Image (tube, rainbow, N blue to C red; front, side):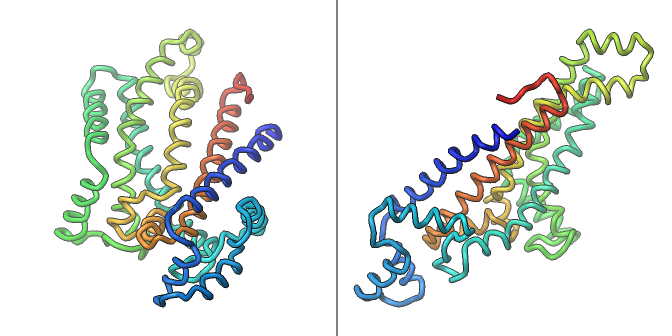
Length: 305
């Protein structure tokens, strides 16, 4: 565990170098862009003063050291658009994205687990055909199209649920379905394939031969091992969702990180984009580490390298 944590240090440093380099590769002078965001035409003296204030007047390596020292104080800079600290802006939107991520994964697993397990236990049955049909439907529907259908029928025509903003638990239903159902098909197929392979193993036959109940064999022996590939994929999807689902958040006006990043791109707010890249890289690294730890707990034969 300690070794894996130490390995994260060079990874995060490398990511910080890339994020800092992207800032300098973007067209335009950050100081001038920042001043123009206030709606005024900056003078040469104002641009130079802002460059000195931001530490952009020194060599690139000194700018990186200065910027890195601010990172350790959780200082990601000031947004050009809002004039507020980027870290504060990101943290204020992270809970909304985390809530949407949780709801989406609950929908995905709520659909995938019963259909995937049923398809594996009764291959060729109507339940298997239903699971495979649902999986095909899930992976075939674009997220933006499903979002529009849910908004039209669930919000406009039937007026059952709110379709924009984050006004309460009911606002979470439609975007969670739009995101979660799109993921469910992948898990249905993966759970079905993994469980079919596990059910043919000798230790499953031995457990049944010892007289264990069918549910105990499935829950305690088969699912525990069949869940490992799905857990790896779950970590990838969790990282992606925590980064904000740009399309769905924009369609539903969900105040999360994805919509915030899109707004920053259109506003050319490079400081926000830089902070967003760093935060998402950290989330991906930590989620992957957590998934590796869970793998080791579920299967003691796995050793981290």
